Image (tube, rainbow, N blue to C red; front, side, top):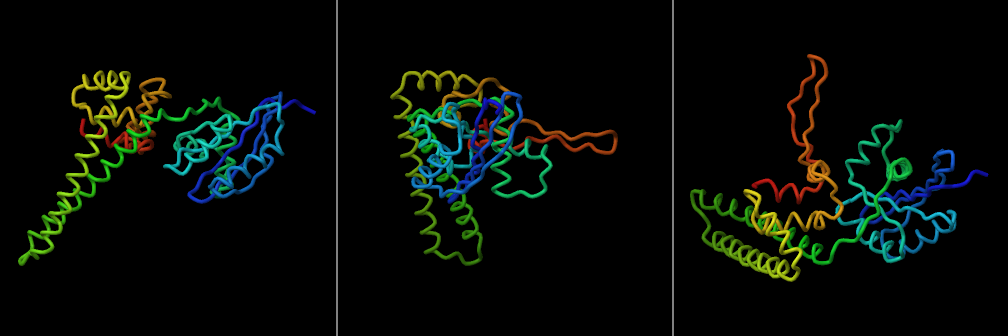
Length: 280
């Protein structure tokens, strides 16, 4: 029997479900996917998932748990596995999508997605995920909260403009919309104040923000948002990786003389980071 040198669990994460595919590589570098099962995306499901994997894998070889960065739905599982001292890797969705296109798969389901993640993990060298610094995590929450407040305020301002432009504006409606805008203004001030106080607690974070602010167009708020979304550039190895993570890398399609599409940014990556850098 050939010796196993690598074991992975590819996990397709949804809001309520985890679809898991197990894969292994032997000493001849032959890869195989051999088991698949679904679990609830909750604490009970996490425990059942780990028990199932432990029964079907070689205990002498660590299993690498690999999943996509799907919004926030993967975070609870990643934290649970990290607490259990398991090896976790989180991959950007565009990497899995690009890999999927190289496979001869015509049907896309949660099961085939988990198989693609497992296959990708077997073929590539995976970096171990590290949970975000608690300060950066809090900054990220506040930065995104502020973004939602600004968006809601913009909608309210547009409503106010539309109401004022009517032939006979409703005074009561105008009053309520103005109260909404005042409320959003007050909430944004509170969030910005909390972010400023948070960044002052850590000398390293404070120094990083000061350094980022030397870039033309970048202020303290943008700097804090960028640090929060990149976890202090913890897993960023070079500028190309950072550009791709923000979805600011350029896509261009050209073939011969007949196909020449206009270059554009990919917009595949962290939309919050891309949004933070848009105006600067």
